[in-house]
Amino acid sequence: MQNIRFYSKFLFILALATVSNTNAGQMDAVTLSARTEKVADIPITAPANAHPEIIVGAEQTGVIKNLVKQKRIGLIMNQTSVSNDGAHMLDVFVKEGFDVKKVFAPEHGFRGTDDAGAGVKDSIDSKTGIPVISLYCKNNKPTVSQLSDIDVLIFDIQDVGTRFYTYISTMHYAMEACAENDREFIVLDRPNPNDYIDGPVRADGFTSFVGVDPLPVLHGLTVGELARMINGEGWISTGKNSCRLTVVPMKGWRHGRPYSLPVKPSPNLPNDLSIRLYPSLCFFEGTNMSVGRGTLLPFQVLGNPDKKYGDFTFTPQPLKGMDMNPVHKGKTCYGTDLRDKPFEGGLSLKFVIRFFEKSGRDENAFFVRPDWFDLLAGTDMLRRQIIKGMSEEEIRASWKNDLEAYKEIRKKYLLYDDCNR
Image (cartoon, helix red, strand yellow):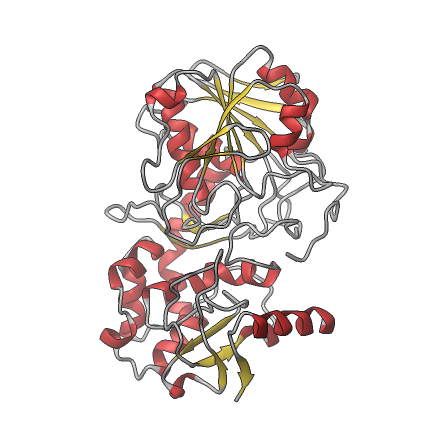
């Protein structure tokens, strides 16, 4: 760990950002459609092959080959679409002779190098010559013409188990497009590294691309299970079970099992700690605080140019492939270094409550983007509760009934052992 810490600080200096310290899992594929549900007979910190006992859906090429035989294929992929040995699945599928017509790219692009919120452009994959079509900004859902030359759309992207992480929003709209155009939709399942159920459930009136479905902040599902829920609950506009959905489950994984991602899922989640802290720190994107974007420690530090926020300092700078216009760019920020504070995971409100107190409880100065804070929370109640001075325990109590109802719905769509719940 000391070597990793030293290397991070060395890179940080190079980047001109200063830091100082003032059962079901054995199924081959699960298919849902409007007609039937069946089991088909078919650091970052972790190095490649760090979890050899886990066989993700994408690695089951024999199963996939049977599902897509003589079909024209579209892929929704990015840099996380890799096998245990680090091979990109587009390259694997092309080598296997799959008839891949095009790739659709989510936020951050096909190679995962675009800034958060930045528009993703259409392109051509330099290695395979296959067209790459953006599903972020220009259109969030495949169009009729974009689906005209494919029979099946395959989703293979690593999620981080958090409602406002937009890969699952892309999946929702892709499922809807497939249902509208009578195309098959296949999800190649991957583990959930933030496998908790916590936070406010997105309320009516707060639907956005960071909250498409009525989920809690931490939904406790894999993308395959979530796709089943979206379809089964009728959250797409075409109604319940209207998507011809197939999930290729993992083997060797169960809920609650720790998992280190072999590839960073997006530019500003570079390691396990940032992924664990992300659900708790993302709320700060609606405040006057920096979460470390523009440094090599995103979602691992907190700070503001006002010295009252702490002794630890860092200076956000434009970083290509991470954030070219970070909050408080070029200004020394004072706050806290969360790398030195143990955090096992889940959702904690202690950070946002503590820094609101440090602000002097000045709601206008602290919540500088209140509407964005509310969309991330999925409700305006959380912000109002913090302003009111409620404790974390009191706020959590207000989520209880909604979370219990959500857990009952969730049970219907599980594919893996859930003995720790």
